[in-house]
Length: 603
Image (cartoon, helix red, strand yellow):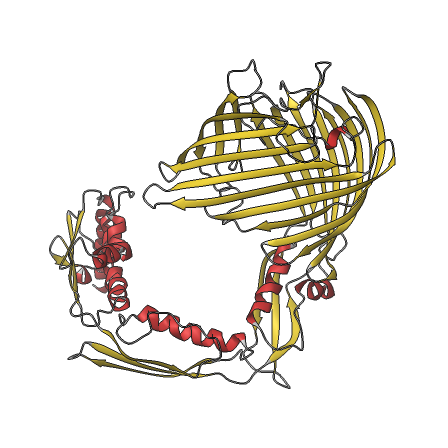
């Protein structure tokens, strides 16, 4: 009989699961009662509810079993929401077709759910009476909400404790913790008295850095790259910085620095770096299409740990102008070697070789660049480079054929405070490049400069609009126009400067009717990016460019402009970009419009 009973139970369970999974909750309607729909609390409860998510009209249809699970989980979730908003005496009941969700067996859900109801009586709102935390480290910043008269939020209490502990950790007390808390609810006054006491613990210094998980990257190199200041006073920012240094090498898929549970000898805190090495080799491909400039193809091969010290070697090949109408085809072969933490933890060494041929509308050049230098990474947003190079080139333009050899000193400073590289919504980007060059033969010495600045700001939440602006300024000082390296001169027109204008269509017109590049350049761009849906966006844009024969802008040159519309489709790596632009001012052109396709925003 026992065996038969077991079979009967198993059969009933299977039937229940099948029946419960057969119906869909697409028609289920949710209502939240007891709270005004116009209140902030109503919106907060709805955002915190799994049941609201499951019954949303844009959500995938949910089974009754999923609705039961969501409703049962909502008891804890919504109580947490209420407590976090200062309601410490609420009553909450969730029903599915009139049945309390807590009483429905998850393995035997109803066949269908038509109506879900969340009944809330939040009760009175509590505020802080006494709000005290001690002791505090100097310059500790507490949340504004932790004060007498403010809403008694559990989230604020947690944030206050975290801020107090962070304050002590910032001055070396790595083991600071909450020692005691005294929370008293005074229902008559509708107040919560909070008295929090911290235990800072001793001031510690960094102990030895242990390394685990590395196989091919040498242990001593991991320590050099991390740059943890062993022996100095503990600072959590140094731990984060060491973690970031290891990650940016690209040699590791995962990096985690953990503090020891126990304090070491002489008030030291041992740290362990756990790493997971990335595959050493990687290969990639890219493509970009323009109706005028044609197809651009690129590929690279990368080795992330060439000599066991997280050195990177990248070999790249690129061809552009395939099938285009912007001159001939351009070719580029390059090799770049990078060694992190060469002179100190934040200074990398690089060496590169590049062979390039440019068959442009107004000039032809073939050049070889050899360069070595350092990159100083001040932080995640700021970096500086300084190098020493040799450039040997042969160029041909309206002035004839020129062969020259230059000794170059490329310098740059880059500030990147964008929230995203390929689809920035907020922040700014600025880069200044200065290249003094000394002519060894065939040209004159001088200085080439290029500044690029960008700014982004987003308005609204329902259908956000991002305004993006870009300004470029270039100058070539020193050589006369007819003696300047042809590939150092500036042109305007095309995807990187003025969309809608033909590629490099604006230069300096000579009396002979030929066109050469200018010694001064200004580029201006503005975009309004509107999100239509989560995936689709539209863009309106306008660009303008200036080229002059003078060394620095004085207004004696020529301007041209273009404008257009674009479509964006969001992907995991960045938006797919399609822009259609027309010329709006400047010298006469034959083309009516240009089309640009690529990955990521135009700037």
